[in-house]
Image (cartoon, rainbow over all chains, first blue to last red):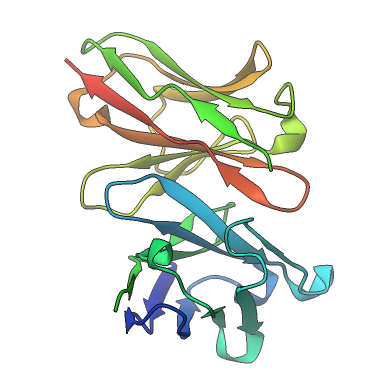
Length: 119
Length: 109
């Protein structure tokens, strides 16, 4: 069974940086694209970005609201994906979910990590 | 940037049938958008129900089905159960980025 565990959550001031980690087990991590999705309190889901696998040259894509500020990376030797966030704004406050493809696309979700951007 | 539109809310009676739709601002939704559907209940993480238009996850009840309908992606729930009351989100691939719809709050009443 897939296990996806986000870590690194916390409180950060506007303009600051934070890095989330996503540790994965129970799936073939190196084959899986890894997505990040966020949800502000009481709001809908927002796709943040994705990193593809080695066969697709670890290509990354980002949502318009985070492009240029957020970077997704991965370490296949550690079965871990990362979300590096810079120039954080109050509107980046949300629960951040990490998602992988286990047997099927988008079938492996973490429980989420809360990022709060506030002074 | 692509905008994905869903009905904000729908109400269905237990045992009834309801169809949720997902439209793209770029035009008709095709299989190339790889439509996904997710269900989220209060206090829980979302979970995948449907991927690539009409493929079910192992845990997806048979009463859920995905399709393309009139230029949109569609999620149809048949013989609706009270436990189907939830928020439903579609997700479309837009040639690089993916984009979520705003979600449909489904009430079973």
